[in-house]
Length: 242
Length: 221
Image 1 (cartoon, rainbow over the protein chains, first blue to last red):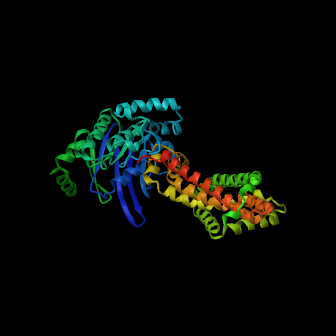
Image 2 (image 1 turned 90 degrees about the vertical axis):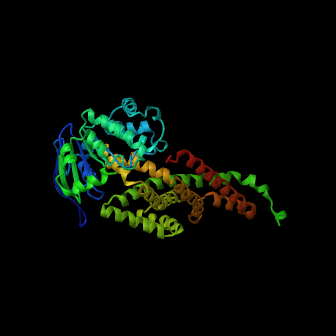
Image 3 (image 1 turned 60 degrees about the vertical axis):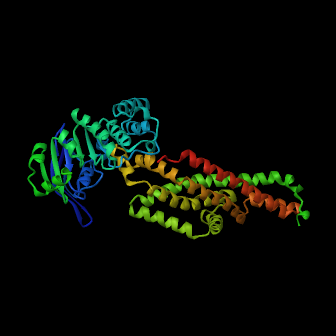
């Protein structure tokens, strides 16, 4: 579903990604973790072309993302993305947030879009807030709406860029619960996160990054059992032992 | 000193003054709408990343901002007929000049407004499959407008007051109409006082509108 092949990226002189290669099969849940500044957020933004890459290939659903001939809006319309800071549109009500993409991008009618939107809001437990504005909701609620907005486009896979990093601790679980359900339904997911509990529960594979390189790419059991690299061992011991 | 003033001429002058006022308001309204549209396009051109487009827009804005409006009004009125070979009339000339001039100021306001929207909003719009123009039209510009309404309207106050400058090319706006009436009835001071009152009343009403709009359309954060 997603193939990342020998991808390198520079910001001016500074190399943020170095020869990254990994892939995500249909129905697979892959957690990407690593210390801050390791390039994991940059990598996930490259997958739907929000960030350009200078070397290598990224292929999503058989289409090369970093090919100038690719119709990026069309490709992005069925790759869902959830951001660290939610990025709901603050000038639209919750239901409008869910409908806008369906109407303007997929060409659905307003009624159809609202109906689909309400179904998804119900699913993430926000139905009663449909006519409120994003600013009136808590962080956890906003992030659940953001997930619903991505789902409203009927995506073939979902990208999560640190979806719980900006949340208060007690709101993290409500967002993770939605993500766990999604994983159990067989959604293809690439998740940048530090939530190792989530990784243990639903991930098939864990990719560990450090300094722009993929240091470890292992099945979940391997990763949590005995990571091969010292750097990953260090990282795990720091975030698991307290 | 006020004992020498005679305000009884005001009712006589009212029809002429209203005609002047109507032109001042028309000029303000057209220049505001045209200026905001043109200004937004200029702002988009400057932010587009296109090298020459951006430079051309910046050049335009710099020129317009460094020449006094009165000069622009005169230049346009006298130069365009020389270039095109036919006069365009005082009122049309004033409307075009004001629109072009205001666009430069509105464009700087819109540029600040667009830049005040976090980059993540663009990413979110693009991520659901919107094109660049869709993300501008549905996500970025509506927020930029809302954030900038107070400043845009403040600029409109200045615009409304500046319409009095069209007297230089002989167009009859509110001030000019009052002046003419003052001369006609020999009551210039009374007319200036009255017209000041009208300027004040309109600007005050506008500022109330700004407050109301701010409450109504402000984004809940």
